[in-house]
Amino acid sequence: MAIQQVTLDNNQVQAVITGSIYVEDAAEIMGEFLGLIDKGYTKFLIDLSAVDYIDSAGIGTLIAVHKRARKHDGGVVVKGLNGIVKELFELTRVDKVLDVV
Image (cartoon, rainbow, N blue to C red; front, side, top):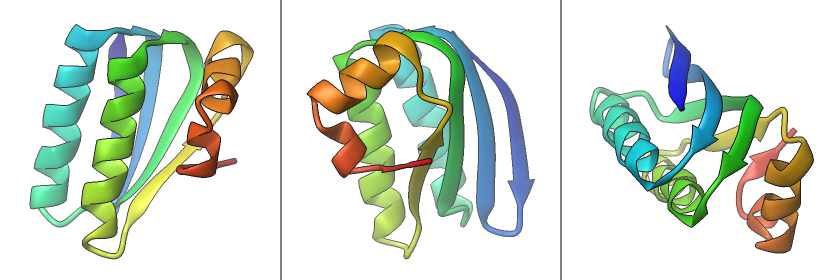
């Protein structure tokens, strides 16, 4: 897993993540995104089109970031879901918690 690109614009973060997201990667994502929230960035657009797998820790991280951002009138929007990642979001109903485009 790698956060390939992070673009900061006003109070919005646009991030592109690639590869697979496992528990170790989730901790890295959590640290980076919560650090950005602490700096005042509250709206996240996360592109997962190049992610081929995400485990429960990865999904939990996205939800935790979303909850923290919502406390500051922000949130997480996820785009580019496909394959097993899309299926996991639908099976766990995370697509009802996070905005998916």
